[in-house]
Image 1 (cartoon, rainbow, N blue to C red):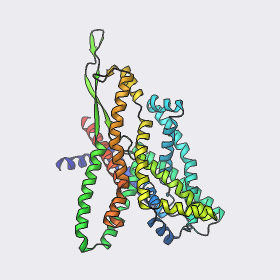
Image 2: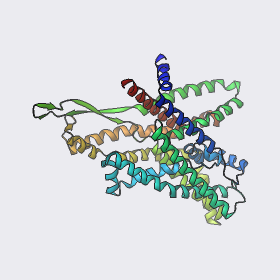
Image 3: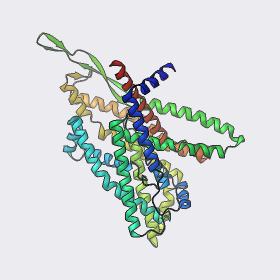
Image 4: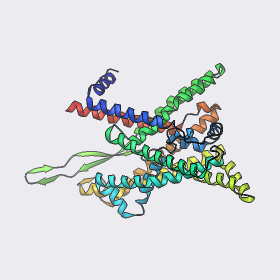
Length: 424
């Protein structure tokens, strides 16, 4: 406890740290203000009904920081930028030049790669905004809009997404931690008062054991998320001794950390996108189609909205995408070559191809644990809702994973800043 107060004292006494913290708070306040400015033409009653009965958009609302449920000017959130980043990373598998920029050109290459992602964000935001607004208009959430109103709304939400991307970049550059993650975190935390209010107004004395069980399960789940998020598999690395002139270099040992959850929350974002796209298509077809097309579309809408079908598909997609994304972003062969160039080797393993195969074998084994973990976390809200029978007690797995990950990463960043200043 004394250590906590000491660190808090250091944060507020150091002008640079204090300035960074206050800058982050200022950006978050701007974000929350923007998330409550609605676009024109909304039917609030139909909007609440739409989100109450739709699991997909409830999940998408997480990544918009709550802006989608209000149909605010920031309704798209940072989702287009995240999608653009994912697409660019997937393109590294197709175009060797992009792979070279991302993996081999160091920090300058990654900045150039991120610039391409920013350019791609604009058309993706416009396309996603058009699709969402068209779907909401078909659901009568947006009513009596002229053609000019539709174009204006698309421009507004696209500009809002680009603005949010810029604010996230500012936080990353002038604040502490990852700006995009902090914006998503702020949106999730902002929804907590509403959740607490729902529990308070639906409180029933006869269900006290249920609340106690939920609290105990929450503590266990949060502990599990922290453990898996921080879990690493260490591969021993040794550096060969080298004699240069009259001095000897190398000859020491270290380790290569491989995270169990190498992919983070990206597979969950992948799965949401895949599940959301067919639903948007069939909802539009159900409204504009006729005869067989309308009947088939309505059947698909009902099929996709089935809780068990949705949960099963969601788990399978998250599991598969965890392996896929890990394979895209982590290249054992490139890592093996870098180790060999630096005079490093894994004890008992031949350098080169054998080392790459050894690292890949370990990586795919621990990814199995990470994939199962992410899949269970993704379907956790559905399970909690089925067990408790209460929407307010549906512990959000995706939201929980993001909150825990962001808190842990931010704490590490702050502690590193404090250690650096103590050293100075």
